[in-house]
Length: 237
Image (cartoon, rainbow, N blue to C red; front, top):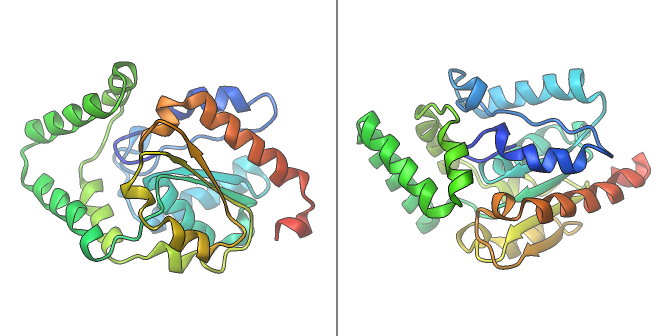
């Protein structure tokens, strides 16, 4: 599952790299891409995941979540651990509380005041500053419903995922960019909450690691998946 402003298209290089061995399913989150007009909420994402796992996957998958997708993956796995075989989480080791919430909350409120052309220009500038031009151009073409920003702001203000996921005992890999400092700020807290979790750092990149290092990211996911699915069902519990 992808991050905010993105879509399932960002996973195409990873899916191609993994498809020889695994059945790979890439999704648009509500408010993004093909689901642009679907309201964003944790409940709706949960319904989409339930339906996908039951009708497309056929068995509990290893869920890969990046940024917003990682937060949603943790919330889903905490509620429905039996529907997952494990998690790969990138760019989401932060609990939005206190000073850590203020920058996001302020940005969210500011975005609500922007007219659509100004909002679009602001987002596109951010894409071209943070991503290689080929990726920025791809993301610009993905439909996005700006109401998602407000919805996520409400969710972020009321959740502490390190507590929510504490009882999850299936395999977990945290796969982060070395310089993704904000979204690794609670790294130690998450590793304490999930003693079975592994941490792997992709050197020389920031929050955009899945796109800037797509092959390295896919290889890490594949290596972890090989170990997860080599285990017996009892070992994965």
